[in-house]
Length: 337
Image (cartoon, rainbow, N blue to C red; front, side):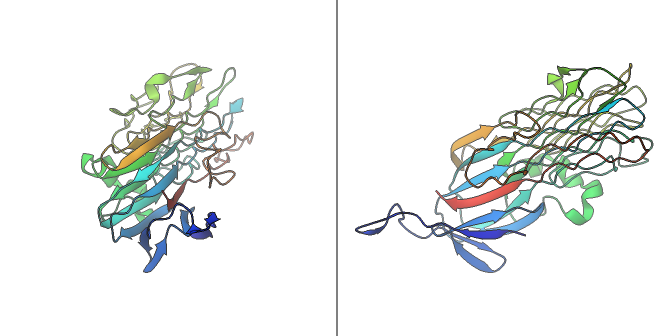
């Protein structure tokens, strides 16, 4: 659930400095003045807010981290990618808006996370994948009151795959890709969320730039030795197919792709999803991609909570069920401009 934190500001001879009028946001039937309170959403989910007047306010958005892979019967598991960051001053017409707080990527369960991070295996007819993890979800702000992603139906939320939903996007921070596994040798870490663009997942120690989400396209579907893959698209990361051992793609304005599952024991990390700032509604935008498992975009920004957006840790467990670490969820903070 969201929580409210006070903002003291500074005072001069004429009262509080820099405040010209109330910046009102209605959430859960309560009206908050952002001049005196920050409205922070810190649990993965979907929230409805209303702006009763066109007053500018600041939004800071942190994407979720991808889950960490495990070694299973192989040699190594690898960490998930971290989430991205997006901020700016929003001038929104009066009306309803949806806030999405991205869910950190978890195990190799056949579902998408809140915010469009994808699993390493197909939702329908899942088979064997004991090693790689789900991508993390994007966090963002969308116009309208229509559902963006219901946590009750996240196993197959087809609204993430539409250009109509993408057209509602105002501000987005991308989610990190799920970590992979490997028989031996170089890293297969998940890619980081954007920012303007996500970063590609690591495949045998090299960054696979084709797996990242950009401003114009999702990451390209990566090879799977054992079956088909489901490519990244609008608002949704790519998914591995039958025995798709690579990590799932992170959610974003365009999602990252599944990790490469080619020959030679490669179970690569999934790509990170891209961020976005709508030029008509966001002024002074700042888009920062994650840079390492524990360094998500915006880690030094005001309001960041330690651990949020981190990629999940890897696991050395050798059993046949996923036991890597879950990625850190995202954050959305509304404050005075």
